[in-house]
Image 1 (tube, rainbow, N blue to C red):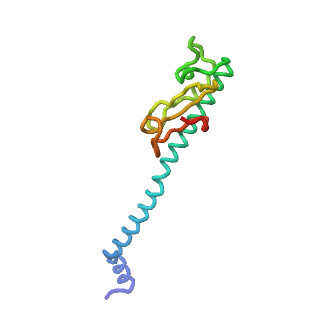
Image 2 (cartoon, rainbow, N blue to C red; image 1 turned 90 degrees about the horizontal axis):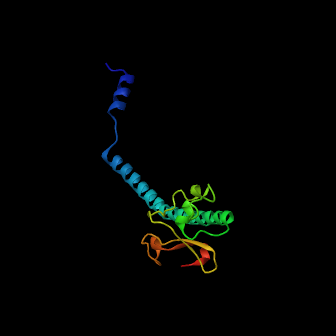
Image 3 (spheres, rainbow, N blue to C red; image 1 turned 120 degrees about the horizontal axis):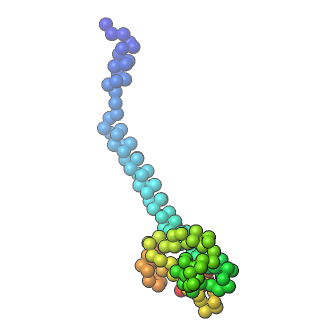
Length: 147
């Protein structure tokens, strides 16, 4: 004769999920996963844009440090990174500001002195050519300098 306790334990061990219950749960997890992926995918573009703007501001800031130390703006990004053309480095912390001076697509940033004698840093976007939309859009610092 079975005791009620033994029957209850056997029923718990035998019970499981039906195929329909499993399909419903897997479908719900799939829908939630799709929503998360779609929502997160937009943040990668925003992160790239934020990195570009931050890097361009760092380049301009480094060129201002260079100018304050030497009395003139560097003529190229390479001069800014390595120091004056005579090999001396005007500011030790410029290297820290320009540690990774490449855009998110691993292209070098562009740097020039504009017609007013002020430095301008810019990124040509993913395609590396002027103009474009989306990831091919150009960015400049100062922002009103335009390309």
